[in-house]
Length: 321
Ligand SMILES: NC(=O)C1=CN([C@@H]2O[C@H](COP(=O)(O)OP(=O)(O)OC[C@H]3O[C@@H](n4cnc5c(N)ncnc54)[C@H](O)[C@@H]3O)[C@@H](O)[C@H]2O)C=CC1
Ligand SMILES: C[N+](C)(C)CC(=O)CC(=O)[O-]
Image 1 (cartoon, protein in one colour):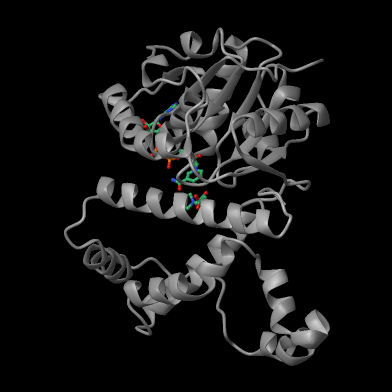
Image 2: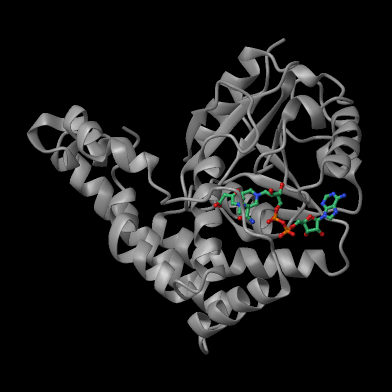
């Protein structure tokens, strides 16, 4: 079967943080978008989130014909997906819910329309179990904010056709993204497995009274966070080995892997730990609203993306290398 890759209509099911990010990205790329979300007041909340993102998208550059007016909010799943060329589900992270939802979505969709799920780490073989034409069903795991961050992890399940993975990567690329094919279906995929390890250690540091949430964030944003935007951990550590590179790095820092630097299993989420994390982050928020911080974050990301792009060009590299 061939799958639709030249898409005109994008369907979004679930319009919270991530769904609204997909809607914003698709609208900015000049598509018609149809959205559905069962929550009361979901349409107004979605339109507000898209409006909050639009300034950053304008700065980045809109496709011809791109408009917030091309968003249509509908009342049923069937209406949402019936005429869609590509479907992206961003419903709550619950296996049972996604299992049932995908049975409904796939039964109502065109058989050759690709279906992507934003799941952060559930397995597609499990939640697409009851899907009609499961060969066109993939995971397309994005990063927040979806409308600016390029990465999308693409994962197939046991019934997904390899051609569907390739076709979905083509579609995501057409939306200005940098797809990464996760070749083995594992919980948490690649990126969330890494982020989750950092998150668990950060919670231990708060729980053990080693540092506040603000101090831990400082340890990331003034150090490794800055270099992570253009060089990953493996290449960074190769340079940290000096001229002898990774072999010397391994010899020098390999023994530290035996030291008790990390705990990895998460700490118990006691009421005190939750309060400490919530109080710490409230102090970090200060008087800023979430939407003001989203605009600040978007401006920072645009500046970083532009700086990395220009610097790569100077070194003869393309942005996606
Ligand atoms: N928040 C994040 O940082 C990221 C989340 N994700 C994934 O995206 C998905 C959505 O997460 P968020 O947007 O963060 O959650 P959210 O809670 O912000 O939004 C979920 C939306 O789904 C709606 N919803 C409830 N029941 C539904 C149903 N049966 N069908 C469709 N929609 C329904 C809710 O009304 C809500 O608007 C999850 O699978 C999550 O793992 C992926 C990447 C990052
Ligand atoms: C916390 N999270 C697991 C939902 C995070 C993601 O899935 C990706 C991101 O945006 O960090």
